[in-house]
Length: 409
Image 1: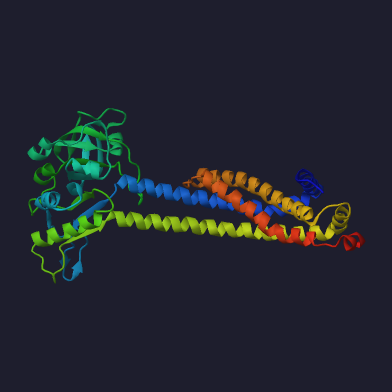
Image 2: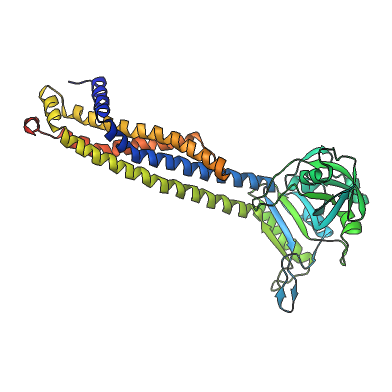
């Protein structure tokens, strides 16, 4: 009876004797595993990039905007009909369930100047709560304090892009810039957030107190109105309840009947985020499945070559059976050969996949994320392919009659 060590040695020797055929047989597995690694790396990278973008936007968010105005039957777009007010924001904060923070918000594009430098950017009028709602963090200086909002103070918190364009490497805190023709003191510098999911530079912005914006910067025919109200719910479980409460409250405050169209729109960013995450996960699985087809093709290649190997080594099998090898020994030997072919191909495929994914990141600038689970999954699937597709040839070899096998030419 042959022990496992001897069987493993014979299987290894057999693969070495037919080295070129072994390499060609493993080629399908190499291609399949490398494709799986690359596809999963790209899919995971995209998922992490989207998750990062979603985190930078903030979580459990509701964005309430004014409804679109109509002119001659033409809808002018969201926010063109000023219906939301500062009082609406206060009422939402006081009366709706599940509220963590509320911030009114209005914005316009303005020209900024400092010395002989100038820069056009978005100016957002809001309160201190907006920074927390949208995950803006203060790098140096401070944010808004209640006195800034109450007194309409001419202070501003600026993003990193604006700071670079106006001040270069100079610390902007305490400096005075002009927003349009109005001087504002820089009291805070935001930490870098980078680009949003739609490619918008989130650092190319400045914030001023909402009261200052309404009274001195933007100007409006409807005092107290705002473009938007940002709401952060306490958690994702209560956000639907919060949205329902806000809808009912605003309908009541704006005297909207049951049959009338709302003069506001509520966008649930949590639902959008979940939809995007689900779509990205589905795409990652699809990419992995497509790459997995290559592994199955490689497995079929292994089975075909192993069947050829059984036919070529019929006499060898007969001799081993004649000197005492059992059918199970023959079966195990061929299974080990198939397993080794698959695993060697899998390891080479992992190395090529990692190199290929990094090349895609370096040359194409794609976001990738090579994870240990994806490597283990690829190798595990590779091993399963080797055993699964190698079983039939091994089983066929173990059924050979020793006498017939010895007579085979």
